[in-house]
Length: 156
Image (tube, rainbow, N blue to C red; front, side, top):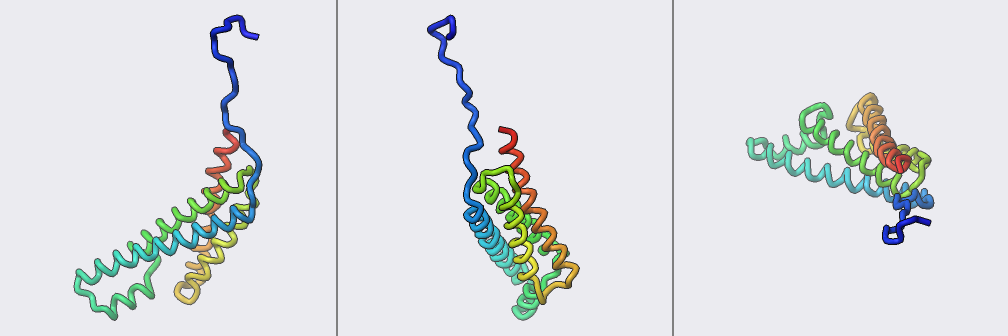
């Protein structure tokens, strides 16, 4: 009991970690963010690129060929890769947030799905080396997002 009856009581107001969430829900929503985010990034970059090329007077057939056989190491390819990587980081963060655990189990599942999606989306367009690079980058980005969230959980 405190000596001063007029002083407000002391309490620990830190937010507790809480109970773990559903791994299935975490992976499903993380995968949804990954797919929808990547799709939106692709659409936006594609539209911007088409507008830029058409303003330069490039023929429609050439624009179509450029979009279907885009060099991943060109300026627009690196921009798409960077934005797609940010989407993967966000997906990993959301997955770990919903799982609400210090375990990486849900993040590993999402990373495997993300890797498969990256390889599947580029299959037949890019070389095997580029596909491995894209798959590895997506795994790394998902795990970075999860690491960021899990680090915040551990800090509480």
